[in-house]
Image (cartoon, rainbow, N blue to C red; front, side, top):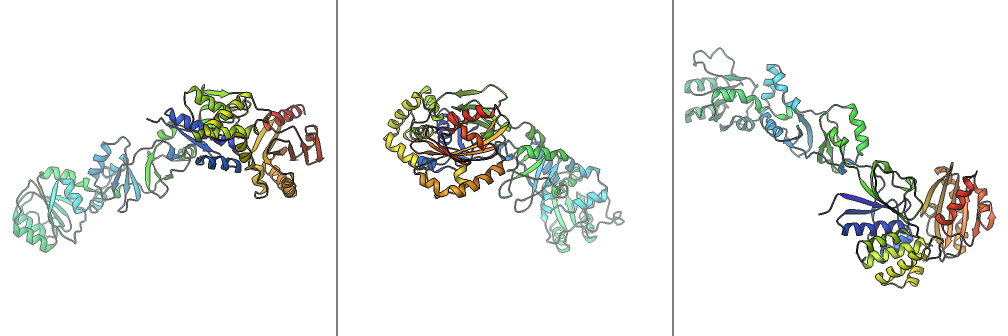
Length: 544
């Protein structure tokens, strides 16, 4: 049996390692009985699309917010009653449920109101004429069901003023009472029954299962008087008839309603201004999916996450502080993610998160499938630029060759095909190129953004450079970077061309071996963002 859901997610602006480590680690967790869901925080780049298509694996779920929506938390199953439901049936329903609120629906099943205990006791506090008005709205079937009787004479023109009389007087003594359009309860007496019909009684209730003659039934039908017969005694009927009042006349109509897509935190703030016991929640098509109370909003289970390929809050899913972090699997520096309790944290110096994931497969005694092996291999080749990155370790290399064997591919040819898939610069907009793999770093008091993509021919970069530089300036201003850098790294790791913008642009001259101008340059050795460029920037900026 699967456990509760856990989302496995990489960083923002996902690269191949971020996506593949989420998918492959989720697959391992699923084999171990964990209900793990692989996720992504943004669109896939061309290289990652190539990888997933190559091995026939679906895109992971797009997730942009770690907060719980109402549909993610436990809600009360609504108890539904129709507007014509009697007060008696409403009480019977309420006594059997834990949440003492009824959801009242109309003929098409749409929510029309809510009825709480305080709503159902209203008739006890009302004036007599107010109660009579409510009784007048009860249907004949509801009255008969409430008092345990059956309609033996019906009328299509039934209408009552809601006044209820218990008739015990002889026919000679009852002439002073106004019985027109009233409800009369009596046990026997054919003369008495005939006189009530003559006086315009709307409904006669014959108690104690007393016999009613065919002549009286025919006369009542002729005069439009309804007769209900019950085995209950007169006193019991008199006590229970008011419970035939329709719950629709008592329910609260001015409801505070929420949609199941609203976030729990937002709803919690809103309900502080209201005093209702329970709140209905509607689904995508306006259907009632549940009810919530303050208890649900205070005691819900937060979403659970496993973070892969990052441990920095700025790269994590939005509102990560509102989630429960179960694990972190990463090969970068340890970031600033905080947890409320000890967790499983696997941080290892190597070139790729999937190198660690494969180790976890081995430790669990699981041989990855061709598809999972192919994804892990792809991530390692991508992150290490086929072992040419300075972050590459022997473990990465050994792991890649083993995974290539399991995936049934030629490592060298596959690396060339895969890395070439990410070099399409002419078919992408400047914004798309910059954000393919853009990471944000807080270095000292400065905010630095670094994007990276691959290229095969320098001519491809030169053709887009003027427009790219203009767009880069706009992006830097919009995101308030002190320095924004774009790394165009050769597909076979033969160096990187840099394009940059911002007030700190001058420091790039101390990093690159060749400066073309104050906005661009080249270095034949720098190919790793995290292992080479970021440490150089940190050393310079922290001393400024």
